[in-house]
Length: 204
Image 1: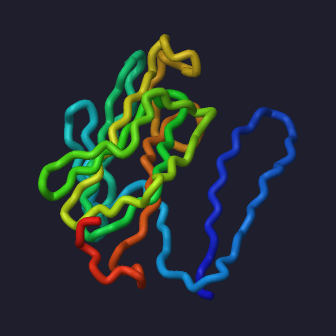
Image 2: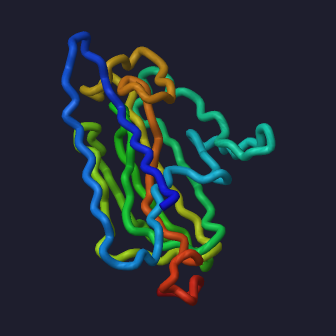
């Protein structure tokens, strides 16, 4: 009760009438729900570093918004973007879905704990737009308050990329496949909202 489903679909036109065969399956839980899994690709306070230049969040109309990321220049073979997301309260991570488009080259996720220790939790060295996968952890990962999650990706807008529709053009950030996206999605729960967890900041 009181919940809703938001379903976001991307379609690519080809000049001919087509039939959509997409289906949605819903499984209802037979047991009491103890936590809600959230799908996040960004937070309000994340910082982006593009080719070594920091792009902090901006306060607009009383709300924090992502700073404007510059377009990918023509003929660039390995254009780098980094997202640094602070973890203001303890979470549990279940899986990741790196999402880019035709220039996407690679993406990796690293957790930095409060003691300064780094842990790589996912590395996709050869990203493929045709095989966009959800990577589920074997065991959920507890990430304590004060940590940060860093996602790093590279894009190939050069002649060496066989999927590149226009290496001579700058690449804009939008939803069409010939544009680009940087969406390091994560599936998490917030520990303080988990009814089975009474010690949200303990190391597990």
